[in-house]
Length: 231
Length: 180
Image (cartoon, rainbow over all chains, first blue to last red; front, side, top):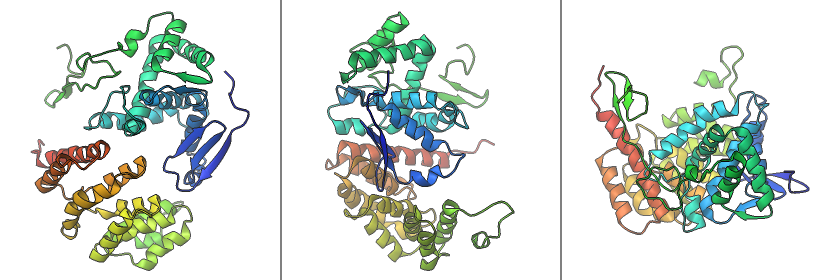
């Protein structure tokens, strides 16, 4: 799916509270990134710019119907930028593994933790979600789907989604339908049933923390599958 | 550290803007950096020097410096980067005695004052100004009272609960018996 806009400018903005913001045709980037770009060994800005470029499709060409799916735009942009930065000096998924994912684990321990996807009443509610859950845990969920159906089916599903809903709004259910079609299997179970209770343990629309205890005598974490052997 | 600033580092190592800011912050926390040292930060680094100076100023173990930093961090017309830089230097381990009164000022005055600010700015300032170095039952009690009293938004309550959870894990770690 080609870039939906004829041009794309980058403006470096002093005092921008975000690192980057993408709107059709224009990326706003935090001025502080200029200093960081001067280090040739630092891939951070390249990764961030790729993330914002991904928003031309996910967030720009197809927008969320409601703020529930804000995470989906951010998770897709994070997943795609980490997948696309093949020329980076360090594999972006390695950086993700040691910098971003631990932040998501930490956020999952906080009282403000929420499911990756759950209903919100307002834009403010969506924006108040902990960013590591929206971006990093969200990207982990997409990556897990890639492992389940394969990267080809994942990308074909994204293309189908952009073709079908380009220029309008869509939801997670629409995207899951495209993935189901391209993977030739019903993925509604992967994304969770439409209405779930707090006890069903799906990543979507429920928040659940498994009880875990450490057992230092044998060096394992009880409650972590496989850590302590059978049982 | 002074010798590092003067350029006496091992061959091949240089003090860049970021390291200079950290060194001077460490000195400032101990009352070993003066205003001229901190002004030098702003002069040498056109990108982050102003913020490094603000953090250094806020770090000093001095009641007047703390009062000025607190006011600067909460001023509604302050550039948010400068406000956050002051906030980031405020709570320094070892300065608990000097900062006792700011626990109450955080929960009673700072939190309501930050309501309504842009979400990222509000979240960052509310986290940075939390009395993190006053880890103990009085701070836990003050946090509990703040979330119960009903004048804070849900988003702000979540920030307080989050900082409270971190403080509880700090206290749990400190009170745990060493096993080896």
